[in-house]
Image 1 (cartoon, rainbow, N blue to C red):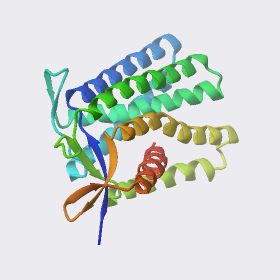
Image 2 (image 1 turned 90 degrees about the horizontal axis):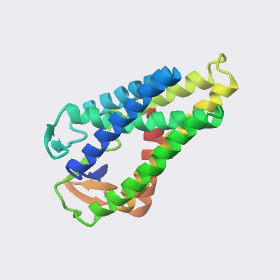
Image 3 (image 1 turned 135 degrees about the vertical axis):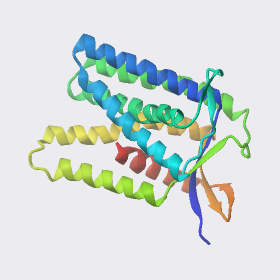
Image 4 (image 1 turned 90 degrees about the vertical axis):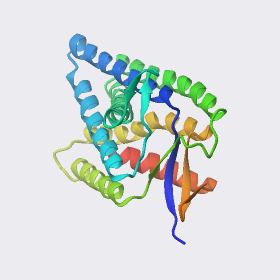
Length: 246
C-alpha cells in the first residue's frame, strides 16, 4: 500500500512568526552595521541571496500546494499572509541559518573572533528561547490540532531541486581544478555548519513534537515510527535536504 512521508509542524500562531520576523530584522541590522563598520559586504550578500533562494522555495511550495500555512498576525496586530509570510520564513530558514554557518566558518578558518562570538551567541540564545517556547507549545496543542501545517517530503519537485543543487555544488568544488584545497575545505565546513545551525531547531522541535514526521495513507495521517523519524527527519531532512539546498 502506497504511503507518503509528511513533514508536520504545529503552527504556534502569532508567536512563532513574530519571533522569526524580529530575528530577520535584527540580523539584517547587524549585517548592515558589519558592512558600514567593518567593510563587510559579503555577509549581507550571503544573507540576501540565501534568503531569496529559500523564499522562492517557500513560494513554489505554497503555489503547488506542497505546503499550506495559515494566515496570521504579527505582534497580534498586523495581518500577514501570502506572500509576506513566505518571505519571513524564507529569510529566517534560509538567510539567518546560512549567515550563522558562514560566520562559523569565518571564525574557525580565519580566526575571526567577532564572527565566532556572533554565530555562537546566536546559537545559544536561539536554543534557549526555542526550548522554553516549544515546551510551552507542547503542553497547549494536541496531536489533532488544526494548527498543523504539512508538506510532502519526497515530492518530485523537491527531489529535482535538491539533486540539481547537489550536483552543481559538488561538481563546481570538486571537479573544477581551479578550486584550491582551502576552498574545498571551506565548502565542506559550510555543509557541516548548515547542519549545526539547523540541528537545535530540529531537535527541540522534535522533542516537543512541534515538528515531526507523519505517514499519510488513504487520506489519514499517523505519526511515523521512531526509525522512520530518525531516517527521514535527521538523515534526509537535515543531512540532505537542508544541507544540500544551501
